[in-house]
Length: 501
Ligand SMILES: *Cc1c(COP(=O)(O)O)cnc(C)c1O
Image 1 (spheres, protein in one colour):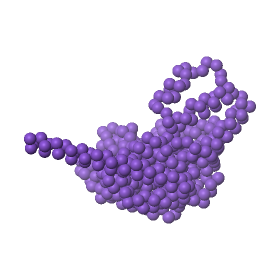
Image 2: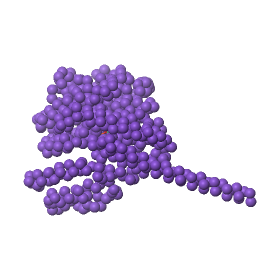
Image 3: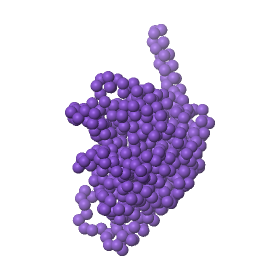
């Protein structure tokens, strides 16, 4: 492909995407394909001869697109949103197109420096304490990781290293390996599966403590777990607090957990993957009260901030905690803690290579402005509220727990079985996509405002799909139940006849 073909293909691709988003409502949110559809359709071997871009593009639209779930359809209400915006697509394209790898500052100065700038911009917008920002004086800073999972693992590894260094400074004779196996990590039983996985990957026992009835990990629960473990010779090392759990968007009280972590020198990581984006609006910041106790904080800008996957923005109070853990030269920098003016990001992450991801964040922040981003968050919360009002007005449903951010959880009063059936039927019809969760032992349906294109009318379309399916289901169940009751009556009558014979 020469540059001329690149121009043509590139323009056609942009036109395709513009049309795709303009017509996002034209197709079902879930694709109508069977498992294996593409594997069976495409050739088993790579093409021997070069193909021209028009052929490639045709195969893309004919074969690939039909098997794609429409994550940006206004009827996509599953999981949490994944961000996209035209600005981010362009930022991603430019970043990929430049084709640089930011291993060191020299490897591409703009790649490092734009990340410093954008992470400071976003950190300030979120109202993070300035210790987290990359600014003088200090050694804090922000770095873009690939995912919230990665951020949780990176911080777990840094916590482990920091703890062992602290213990060695107190007692240089301790056996590092025998001590490390006593380290324990904690989170709530409501945390994302990636938190448990970080314990597995980082070889640290991860205890998932019981959340309170509103899904929050409370201070007394953590305190008790710490005390029991210490009594058993274990060493609390790492705590992952959730601001916006994946299931029901519950917020752990940082001001309860923080002082306990501080007292025992355990690292406090805050996983605010989805809901953290809302802190750009001052009215939500009370939910991160106690943030000053955190050692690290992560949100997925690629979830609710209109930036394409992958862009998980993570801040640490002390960059040296990462550098000491990940710089293989292992020259501990504790004593020479110079201010970090320009971070060497390869020591802030797992891989060596790094993409120019900050361009996506930069184009989004510039093209929306802080005001535009706040409007986005507020309007999505408003749409969720509108949906909640519609559900509330129908007495067959219960909303539980209270809606939070763009998430509304609801169930049918009649019980789990019929709520599950409702979700299954809706999924089978492919017009709306939601997933289930559990709350207080009950099955609930999670409805999240995901698409940036969602309007009030779209929310009403979604509600109508749910309502109509419920009507059908309840009518069916009634008729069905009636026939079962009649059948049972008949059987009873027959039995009685038998007996009287
Ligand atoms: C989505 C989510 C994650 C996982 O995010 P990835 O970027 O896919 O790793 C972790 N924690 C919470 C609370 C989430 O909502």
